[in-house]
Image (cartoon, rainbow, N blue to C red; front, top):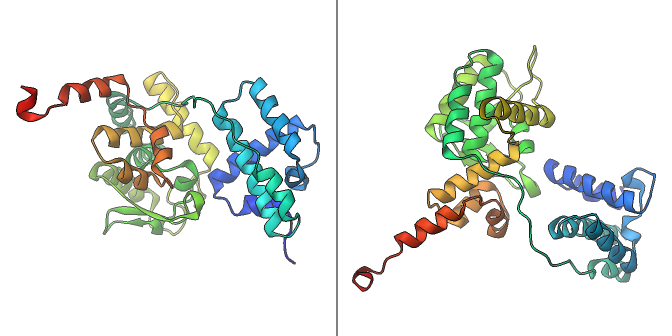
Length: 298
């Protein structure tokens, strides 16, 4: 039987990380309208222009950023577009929602990146833990810093996604269900090989839970590993997404061009990549000092 539930169909076509974010946003909208039913049974596609303008105002009064509010609008518009394609609403109803304007405002950048010294301390400290779990944790964090993988991408990796011949990992379904090949630096591949020597060559998830069997490492478990290890070793909590920011920032510091970094991060456009750039004012100062026009600048 054909599924004609707009919310369910919309969520099902998203990657895991996008779906998690969309569900969170829809639950926030649900609270505003004081709905009690599960989100996949709620009429987001029937919200009026006036209701959405009221929603924007309410979120603004709660102190939510322009980016967060616009993200919520984007999701509701996606549900409305899905409802139209499923013939649940007509074109006029869909356009009433899609024409609600986004709000303008300064994007407040969240998150942080590890400094070169912090990353070095974290990796060197993890390398000294010789237990199976310790080696796994070292490999997990090394791969995140070396590839910038999203939590969902790393947890979805299987043994056959690693290709030693090309020194790379294949992400079969990243954000937007797009695949990409992620190459590994020698140091990260060495740590991964050490983990695989303990894991064995049995088919299944690349990174597994502690204990018997081949059970995949969950997204929540990965979050706890990163936050606990960074807190213990660095005295400061960093999240898996901060490791992704570190990867992007480090590449930019190495003068890798923005388009290449965007492709390596699995971003659809370079504008998104720029939001992850955590280089400080010192980078701008060094760039200014390095500026020269040959004889004319002498």
